[in-house]
Image (cartoon, rainbow, N blue to C red; front, side):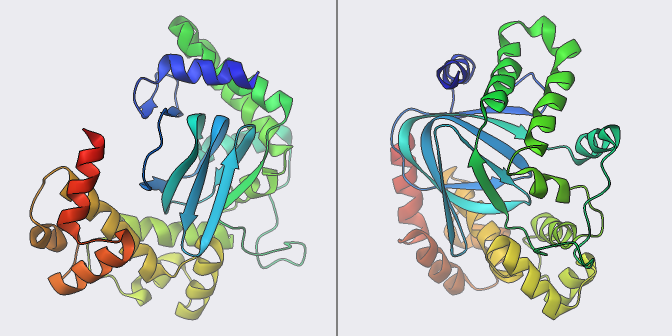
Length: 295
């Protein structure tokens, strides 16, 4: 069944990544080795049918290969390396409302919040991986195969998505998936902080503003934000700035100095230094190298 899922991805994904006509289904394919790729993960589950991808964020690294899946609980800037190609995956972009409705339908009590005695570990990590069960592989394959017969998408897509979510709830990623629906959990507060930083990444945000948006003290924000994402809020913002700067430079949207200002840097010297630390070479040379690979 994994081979069939890989064939469906290849059939409907002519580019590296495609948003499909099936709601919340994205397909990803890489046929050749590529250098480290900047990605911004959103709340999603990625089902790997072929190949393997390593994702790095902060000081953490996750390798997920054929037959495995990973759940991203928060928006997270990562560096991805496709260590085994061809690479094929199907991605379910998570809708918290749909997930909450399913839990209500199942009659499940809400998961305990971080402050309750039964809560267990208060801070799930941003990425959680596990092997796919045969039932999950089969359900995801049927969901992706809706693209073969588009007339079936409207009546069947939501039902199949619900089945996938149901099977995920019974898998090792189920506890982390349930936490997405808890309004006052530590995870929801970290997600609020990450969302604010993403929306205002080019602005001179203070830690106090971010903490207020997350309804945390500054010390609590630092502790839980790093526990979930592997980095501090300020480093999270820096990663977003550098990723966007790289995109702009690669597309020729301006000079290094102009791009630095666009993404929120006051000092061009600081921008050049941090860019080189992140990507191993000065902005102009790095962008030229990336463009040469893309040609």
